[in-house]
Length: 295
Image (tube, rainbow, N blue to C red):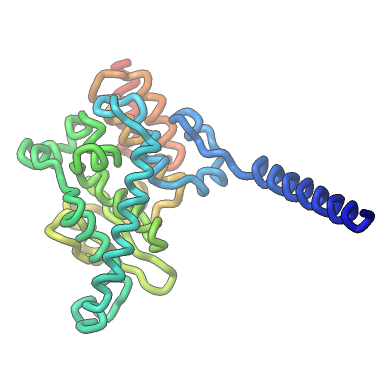
């Protein structure tokens, strides 16, 4: 009886200790932002732990085109897409080993090609061709490109499989990071692309083309618009964006959408938030000044 009692006491202690440990873990586990406002008040340290897809989706909250936005469903879909990318990598990796020269003897480049083709060919994610036909993509003098949030943020791909150069590179990075790839967002004048950079191997990834292409930094100093060295420095072109700069980029796109729909007060607030991470951007300052004048 005494032995049985001791066993019961030991078991009870184990349960209590386990519950206490779980409680400590539960309390200490960082809570994720659930709204745009919650996201934008986080410190830089906490922003660094937020999934880029979650940041992007929360920045679409309340915008035209995001009336049916369901963040949890979108994130679940992206998780499933990442699983498909990994399955395809396992299926087609033999192609790399049969012809490594086709991928410059880089398994990383094979992984990126597989990622891009899975998104474009298997999942049918592509560009809104109406933006191309209308000339909105080349129009840097207005905000008409930013009219519909589905063209700018990840929910567009989940809902309609359609986006733009503002969202397809983000999709590549969001899915790639889920697969463990060291992908970064990078900007150039009037365009967004992504980059593989693991500290040893570094190359740019272009998706505004059939399939996936690799281009040097010098390419983006001329395309899609000529860029000076001073401009590249002030606008933070051709650098890996950190988490705060990624957030600022998404907030900037949000501001442009609000601006296009004459929601000037909200646009001004968003431009100001973005300016904290791009303090020398003459374009951002001009947009903020213009919207404040019209407010």
